Amino acid sequence: MYVKIHKTEDREIVAICDEELIGKKFEDSGLVLDVNETFYKGQKLDDDATLEIMKKSDILNIIGKKSIELALKNNIISKENIIKIKGIPHAQVF
Image 1: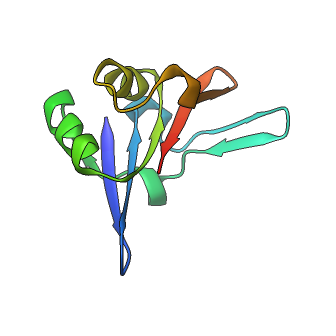
Image 2: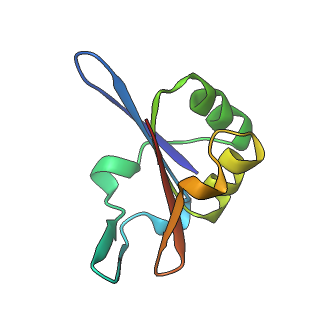
């Protein structure tokens, strides 16, 4: 999966995305999920490295079945945090 860290003056936003979703756009019931390369395509990491970043981050934007499952399995998110757009799971953590 891809992990990209966006740093601002006072915080970091971490974008995590399944590799096969990069560059795609999904629309459903007025919701749009734009998985653009600029925001999501960072460093390609394995599960262990991605999990370490998830655990240290305050703000996460997670897209894709594999990425969501990793976060769920490790209690980073709960099922109530997940929405699906065209069947693609997405969660945000603040």
